[in-house]
Amino acid sequence: MTRTTLTPAASFCDRLFVQAVQELHSPRTLATAAVLSALHLILNQFTIPVSSLLEVGFDFLAAAAIGYLCGPWVAGLSGIVTDVFGYVLRPNGPYFPGWTLSAILAGILYGLWYYRRPVKLWRVIACKAMAVVIFNFFLTPLWLHFVYGQAFVVLSSLRFVKNIIKFPIDVVLLLLVLKTCERYRARRRTT
Image (tube, rainbow, N blue to C red; front, side, top):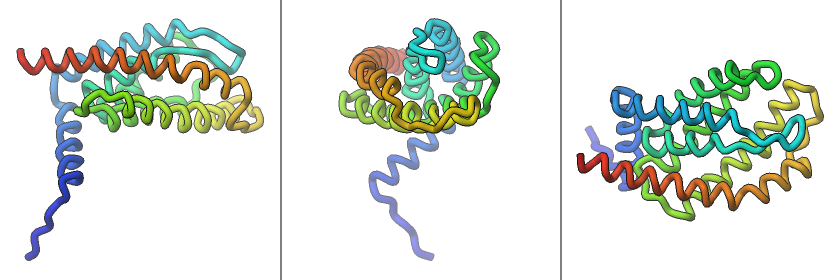
């Protein structure tokens, strides 16, 4: 029988995957995710409407913190909770499961980029850029097309301008939040 050896990168990914799954069994992790999910719901209540189909919000900061502290699987599951409870607290049109899928994917994305990794500016920029392309330029217009029947326009001028203006602000805020989470995690390891 031949034994396969893993490359260091594959070995790291395997360990990361196992650690992320184990987070589902940690009461401390689940409590952290619950508190941050509640913060996510609070931040979701304070969005800035730009138009009837476009608003500016900062609830993604809590989702990124969950991904950083709890891992991709807990963050994905908390995406389900925050989306459903967010809809109950502030229904904005009909319920559509595509938004829940986006919340799950966002949590997983943040977890894959940030969980157990050092906070670096390039990582924050790359993750945020990927999130903007996937969610703001593709999935959100697709869901709006399904729900409201509008023409599927990936880069509407209003959406593009909003994301260009908001991108550096989001990166700075994400960097601050993740650096705070990094300090929290370092303190938690020493106690």
